[in-house]
Length: 354
Ligand SMILES: *Cc1c(COP(=O)(O)O)cnc(C)c1O
Image 1 (cartoon, rainbow, N blue to C red):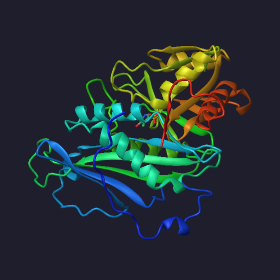
Image 2 (image 1 turned 90 degrees about the vertical axis):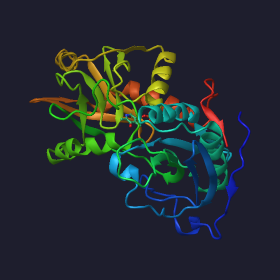
Image 3 (image 1 turned 135 degrees about the horizontal axis):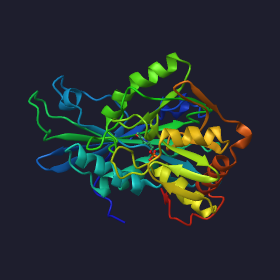
């Protein structure tokens, strides 16, 4: 544990919680009373502050807006039946945040700001954590370049913020997915493994075009052949073939190192399911479907936890999956929920108490 650093706290006068219902919450629409803000200048982090949630005043020449040095994280906090609050695996997000920072040529954020600051902020806004099934407090840490100059070079100043949003289920319905053969999300040597804002910006056209054809999202493929599978939308992807769970391996740096992906692999292995992390070719998936061996396809990510896929289309070939066969993904979700709801022991040390 790192000693709590000196964080200036300014409390809101009247909580907005009086005006918001924590029932039927859309994802990321409402924000809590407070936010954390810190500034990086002259090679160090200063002015670490928790204050009322409020707009930022930014110069039009702000470096992040022009050249895209902007990264973020997504984490969730839960409340158990006794009203105790926990954050799910924040140290993994903390490490990944600094990996993203390195790749985008941005400064690292120290643990006493990222983790301790987050804990203090959540403690202050603890009443905002919903304790309904599939609801949580979504935590959004982010950092962006703040130099006010149009010259192209790494910014020398940055802002780091944490905002909090009480939220309900992200993908209530199973998804229809199109295998993407034209656009590319990530290539070796690129920034696909970093959680930077531009990855999302670059992905939106493909998703919109898929939606025009009646699909929800795309299954990303490699940049060279458009055959090797990467991720589904902004989630990691799993295939269950002949009772073995397959997920693309991380070594090419084209895939985000999902915390949910890692949790799902751990839980599957504990359930006695064989997991293979390796390259996966679309033909392998199609052939497995033709042979009747493709049982389940699902996406994993903090926002959705596990998102079932009911339909997957590659060229003219449509694969459909029946809810009745989603045994494995449902079991993994139930086991993960049991840990988050503290119905079973947290044997992996995944929960950080507020
Ligand atoms: C955030 C993200 C994920 C999911 O990561 P989690 O740590 O499980 O939330 C997967 N893919 C992409 C591209 C992402 O940005």
